[in-house]
Length: 348
Image (cartoon, rainbow, N blue to C red; front, side, top):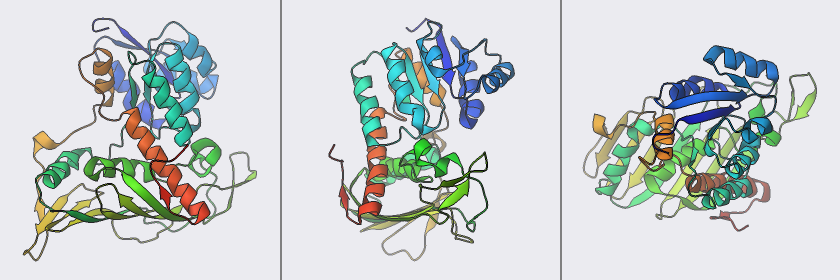
């Protein structure tokens, strides 16, 4: 459909959808954002007025089944990603789905299988954007042998805040809405896969620091998603990784990723994406300037549209990669709950 107008419906106009996806899609030639369905009719109408979207549907099912679209952008919380994706593909519509992919690995595999049954339709996940600027530089340094054999990885992605026992229940605290997705674990594992490949074994310990919080109606609810996780990982490349994710580490040092090899070390400042490195025989790390041609910016909507038009293939992010990070996420929870190491890929 290289010359056909791409008519996009928005299911769930969340913050990133309003900030990135709707403006990005509307800015592209031959693309129209024609409909929206949000959590309520009222909120959908607000989004429609703000962005000039002509049609508001009361439910996501009405939008998906309507014949005024041929592509969908799904910006809901994870609990709806799988059912909306399956319905969209069943109705012959291309899908751009917000991260995280799904609630669990089973849902992610169902989404992948549905997409594979319809190879003429584009199925894309919104990628983890945090490291796009540095990804290619890290990949190139590893590929050219800068670190030698990769031996160990350390990644710390924490919030330098003290635990807040009074804040209300957020959707990220509720496994009924977020599934096995813990903090920012999924996006950082996705980035790690880009650099060094997937994990084969996971051992985790997690903690829920505030077991009950008030929801929006003032009712006390159980908190089921951890706010701290320490994960030990065996990578397919043979290295061992230690990953820490937390929302309770007050005054913690800055977030960073270290890649330790037999001949060299790489360090990425996760806040600034400043990359530094050093090799055997050197006493300190030195900053490495990432060439502009290696820096990848945000082009999610462009990639989605180009893939629909047959101009490129989806690379950031495929459903296959989504299944890998959802299996990792589930493995962390399984390990923490059982006290055992979990092998990847998961057995069904």
